[in-house]
Length: 304
Image (tube, rainbow, N blue to C red; front, side, top):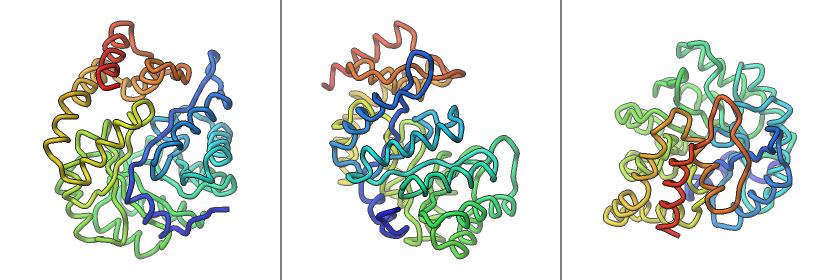
């Protein structure tokens, strides 16, 4: 059973750094629960505000519904008493409902609703998709503005009026005018988080638009650096932010951008580089090649 009401969850998440733990796999690409528990325990030992199990960085898109439930239940059991654990819901509307119900039964605190699978959707269809999921759970729900789920400000307002358990808006597009419209219309009714790949790059400008937090993938393998970066952002310390961007984040982006799909693969490579391996990535993702891995390992060593 959830420990937080939806509003309590929103109040907690908006004031701290968030992250998506990688999902550990063994050599046969099966869920490695023991190693996942070790990773979660390490992640929760730092003052992170919330962890999203089976999310994008956790390769949730590669998990079956049963695997996703197993991953979420494991996360709740391992660290749910120390940090809020949220789950992802995705695929078709029916599958998203199944994910949300399973997450609630597992003891998760909230849901990140991913875009519906494959098909394009207009605003009325998105309203009904989100409404079906919000109506199927008492947990707080965060909508993910990305891909084929681009929510107009008026659509977000309609959903917020209809569902009190809609608590957050996560942006994965980076359209500043769009983000400004959503925040101007909804204000403090929701909390707002950045969800672009390597969100640190956009964190400072998005803070000015009302996004007080973001999800950090690099928190998986350089948690203290990620927390320090977040502190600099919240302090509006542009000098410190730019130094960290130049010293680590931008060189990291340069490696990430060499191959499609590296946005997830590079996170697992980072864990391997610090001797905390979480296993391989599942296809269609691919591991870093030897040069890219060596470059990443050297980069991490510079800030360690």
